[in-house]
Length: 422
Ligand SMILES: Cc1ncc(COP(=O)(O)O)c(C=O)c1O
Image (tube, rainbow, N blue to C red):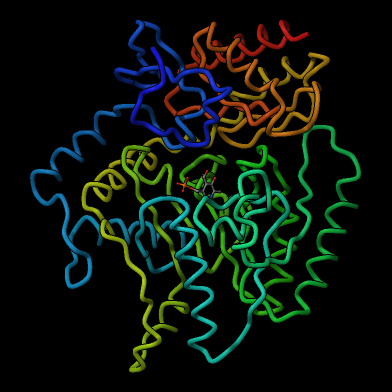
């Protein structure tokens, strides 16, 4: 098969990338290819497939909803699925208001715009935004600006607004000097907060796209302390980490954070439909209620609160809440196999959080462009496992429904692939 004459694939350099694999279907953790192969989807299709592919209860909920109400304009109208989802997410996150959008980037844009305008509605001109080194918050302009500068953002650099950038003291098994690096980061945050600050955005506990880089919960609590003392708002970007990925329903809960805003997407619909949700505190919501029309939050997307997405999200939440042990106990399934892998001389900086396990290969540069990732991907495909390393960072982020033998197959494929490296 060759590249399709009419498609343009995301984040893909056609000059060097292998041609895409044609997939006919997917069940559970398995992708069924046109050539008859079955591959374990060990990264949950870009971190969205929460329970498994074609999860019957979610598929059925979408089907039922499609026959009732597939879509309606969400200004002037409301509907049951949106109301039920908002009620449940408010109870689960502790943030009372849900604003819908379409994906992770827009969930972040909405959080940013709410935070920014809330201060203006208050008559305050706080301008500074703070984010972390290595952050990734999406590919739209506001989200790109909040994210760290990288090869992803270089062409647009002149268009991106400035953000104060704080070091991210990421850690791994057997780490040293961590306290020192955390203290330095907090010192820099303290200095930054001397400038009037609107908000700080963080991927709680784990930065995904920059290489599955994890920090300690205690560090984030110190960040929160400084932030709250300054009055600045805390935005938790849980687009990747939400819905059980970190072993708790939300990463903010595992880290004991109380954000003012939370961006959700990916696992929100169990990975079935594109949807974003920005949870906001009641205090922020009230800051937009005014006789003054310019205090309105003038933001909306055509598919806001799409009923099919809401139905999928409700069915996905049912599954999560009926089987909490599936995410709460996932870490224990990774650890023994990771320990085994860590004995390999090329495996370094191992870390694990909930359903997510990662390590670095000591082979060339620590970089997204390190070709060792593509080599590992090709080798693991030979063993029936689909991975997408971030350069020399290799990670597993499987659906919750992965069986023990499938997980074993993933680690077996990795062991073999690493043993083949030059
Ligand atoms: C933490 C985080 N925020 C935002 C996004 C952007 O989400 P989307 O790709 O759905 O726009 C991502 C995507 O990977 C993410 O990991």
